[in-house]
Image 1: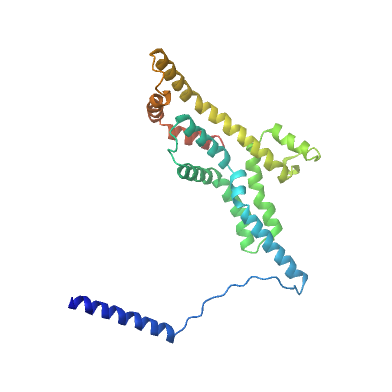
Image 2: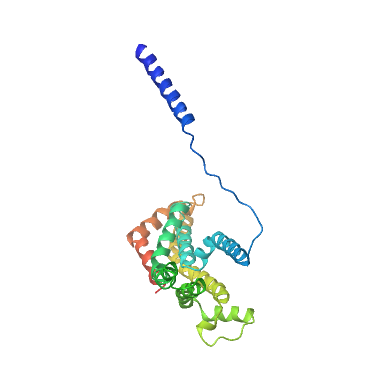
Length: 251
């Protein structure tokens, strides 16, 4: 009891000492202010508009990352795979999204490196202006999207935008290229997902037919077919094949 009383007393003295030190040396806390004031020159107005534009682009960054890169095709194929396996939430959404993101960074690394070398680094070193950096930065991304976009989809959005018929890829506006690329990726992802679905669908049909012939109508076929589908996926090294097929489909 005596040791416990001494401990409490020492603890109280330490608290008092800290309080006294804090009172003696007051540390000023930072204050952040946001407000709208009157601009003194047109340059300040332009700077404010640029800040608003940057903030707007940051809010759209997830959509830009998803829809202008290889992420769309990858996540569609992985979603079809989990649906075909009928493993419910295994792998979880976090695992599938993480895998899709890392595969996206891997497949897009040549494009990102080109954007960094041709646009970002020269701009940070004050060698080129902001407009020139934007033009050079979007060029590698446009080349990537052109390689994955079907001519039929591109022609559709050129027609819908009532733009003149482009003679070269440089004549295609980026706002026309992006939606054409998106629907091309959706179609490609669904085609790959359908091909993945076929062998697992055959297993479900065989198991269902077998159970019906045995008169076991009350037993869900999914309960029996799930171990066989997982075994088949493991035997063919499914994750290796899926990753290789996804990466090589962009080359």
